[in-house]
Amino acid sequence: MMNSMKKKIAVLPGDGIGPEVTAQGLKALRAVAEVYGHEFDYTEALVGAVAIDATGDPFPAETEEACRTADAILFGAIGHPKYDDDPAARVRPEQGLLAMRKKLGLFANVRPVTSYEALLPISPLKEEIIRNADFVVFRELTGGIYFGQPRGRSEDGARAFDTCNYSKDEIIRVSRLAFNAAASRKKRITLVDKANVLATSRLWRETVQELAKDYPEIELDFMFVDNAAMKIIQNPRYFDVVLTENMFGDIITDEASVISGSLGMLPSASIGAERSLFEPIHGSYPQAAGRNIANPFGAVLSAAMLLEYSFGLVEESRVISNAVMQVVDSGFVTEDINPTSPKTTEEVGDKVAATIHELSSVKS
Ligand code: IPM
Ligand code: MN
Image 1: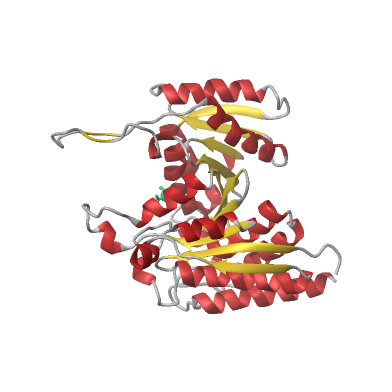
Image 2: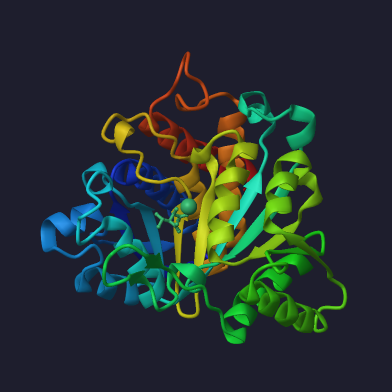
């Protein structure tokens, strides 16, 4: 077949429902590889609580190596209740995620938010408000208060501090991606910040305003994060591309997931200069682990983003997202969406893979 590709993918299933949903993402990738004649080579590695159990380190050197030698990374989830319940735990699974982002230089987190016609009724928001909502959040991922120094406790332990800092360069590299995305969308960027209070936010505004001169066709507006939090659920159709710093992006994307109907629907891409990582935005959902009930669409759509962002396989990526759309529309879904007659995680994954085959045979 023409243009067939040979690529290496590091697979990091992680904790909780991570392995189950990642397996469904892999089914979609295998289906696409088969249909289009690509060759994807998968290397599995440990991250999170499972990595702590095995090696004492939530992001072990071997895993880092597997990531560095791969063309792209597919990641599941991280986190385990035994650490959440123990504030004194010295190593935490989440440190693995943050170390992975920092060490691999994954500076931009891209989180698309779309509404699905079939899921409108399960959102607590009114249908007429969320119908046709379609925006994408560009969240800075390796700076801000998540990583700023100094951080810690005072000597007597009675005071704690975190530091938020940003450099112009950190702001520019994620902002460029956002402007480029806006250029192929509705051409509007909203910078979400807290410039009425924070010095870092004022640097963001200044820097993004300056950068906007390179993109005269893009309309740029500014919104304080408290106001944006309200606007996202009041009038989500207002947004096209949302650009924001690390912690604001963390918060507003969980909020925005309500528009899709389920946190389990949302994929994300964490873009690095050399390679990128793809993961559903949901966490490890320990209560559901091993029960074959978790929603795999976020993981499957993350695999679709991987094909587009890392390999430039736009058509293959569309086939996966169209398959998801069709499977969702037909009501073939897990219990978070349909509690009365749910399908299992695996059944949904198989259905998506079968639909990928169907859609591609219709095409050719
Ligand atoms: C996310 C998660 C992480 C974050 C946690 C697990 C550290 O909530 O990817 O959004 O805050 O970035
Ligand atoms: Mn989060």
